[in-house]
Image (cartoon, rainbow, N blue to C red; front, top):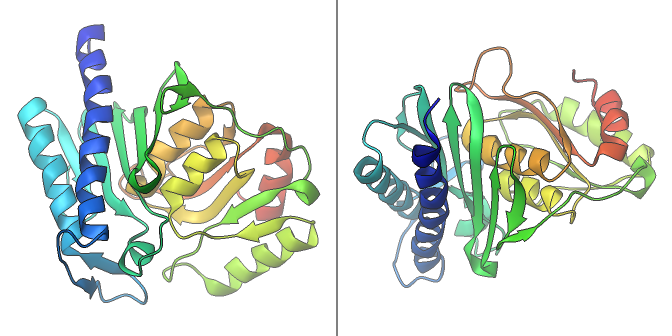
Length: 262
């Protein structure tokens, strides 16, 4: 494990990078910089020049600051190494290309397989959600905590779904959550929904599979804000990702029981 100075440098850098990446993404969103959306060949899976440009900015800044660290990005791939930055340049691209103001930049720093720094930046609302393992979680520098919700029939649960996931299983879980009394929604940007669980705005997030660029930073936020999370990633390792449950402690067991994931 690196010394304190090296880690503190990366902590400060992660915050700057998240804001820089968010500022560039916003320029595309507001059409100061033009772009066209493209399909990745999967139903409702979109990418754009904006995604690629923001990821390139992250890759170039990381290479200049920490040339020995690896980077894994959603759009351009990369390596998993002892020290790895995991980047989603625009999480919620479907929202982004439709002009919906719910998307973010997600950046995680993983060392020896453990996420130690997480940053989720919502540039449209000027909010930087930030966590360091063992040091708590903040939004714009102010400490945040998960909600005190203690019952599913009082819960606002985010239930993520994308086309690669089994639709019937998704609908079964959604029905069971609704039958338990939960309000169930999906705002279409997993990293930002996890950040909002950490901030106590939503009570839980559940999804059968998330890639690390969508999940790593947000899960650290929830854990450092006092929430409970399903161990992540799954048995195939960080690159493969896994199932996600992130919730207020008072409803975690009930939610995990309904989902049937352990």
